[in-house]
Image (tube, rainbow, N blue to C red; front, side, top):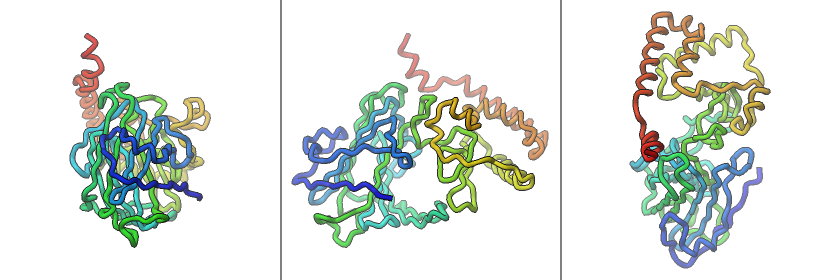
Amino acid sequence: MQHPIYSCSHISRPIALSGKLDDPIWQQATEIELTHPVSGEPFASRTTARLLYSTDYLFIGFQCTDDYIYATFSEHDASVWKEGCFEVFLAPSGRFRNYYELNVSPLNTVFDTFILNGRTPEDESFQLMTSFVNYTCAGMSTRTFINGTLGVADGARGWSAEYAIPFTSLIGADNIMPATGDEWKMNLCHIASAPHSEEMNYYSWAPVFNSFGTNNRTNSIRVPMGGGRCESRNADSACNPYLAAALVLAAGLEGVRENLDPGEPHHENLYELSPAELEKIGVQELPRTLGEAVDAFAADPFVERILGKELRNEFIKYKRAEWEEYHQSVSQWEIDRYARMF
């Protein structure tokens, strides 16, 4: 696979960070547009990046268009990728087996770590990756700017971020300060904020389809290349992990025992298919609310056969009460959306 090459220009002075990329010196940087890592197609949430370097710092700037910007994490090293962030992966050594990951959220919350990557095409298990979570990119500065209102649907036009990363905190190459002609490996990523449209234009979120595939994260069941294991991606925090694990194991064993055929794996990006196209290939949506999930749970005789009638009925009763309680609460989104109309 031919990887793109970015030529990073040297600048004679540091950049004044504001989060807006409004320092005129940014015009010396080549702008690149981030695309889908598999298809190469542009994201609906258009994202661009620029890079420059001075004697002491690597500067990276991101800009994206997005009408819904969501972020709540404020503590350093929080899991910002679960909500939305820009991600920088840097390998000064030029080797992809060891690299730095530097993420920043719209709230300017930073997650930074150093990774040793032992995964292979035959075994993509995350257990083969070692993350040095105690690593801190000492001396790094970041700034962000939100063009609009945080956490309000259709309340923004986009957000941007700037990094100033000291070379002394990026150990890897023989010469810590890069020289002309040095080559690093890198990757840049934008994980968009929570999706809010039925088209699911954002590729980084949990799957919504009852389907399976190989190295394709738009499926609810993923069998990584090389086989030997499967990844169930459709559970969330509303489920009971013990009951979920019991039912997943029982379903898998029944499939083996009955020699059930799951059909052909899906390699395409299911988020990009229309409802008619999904129907044509026989892919259905998973329940989209807790209420729908409980109804599906109650309608499946497999559940009672595995868990027993009493446990099944009590769990359904408990979860329906939880769903009713949810509907009696007023969320911050409703306040932001409707209170100002009256």
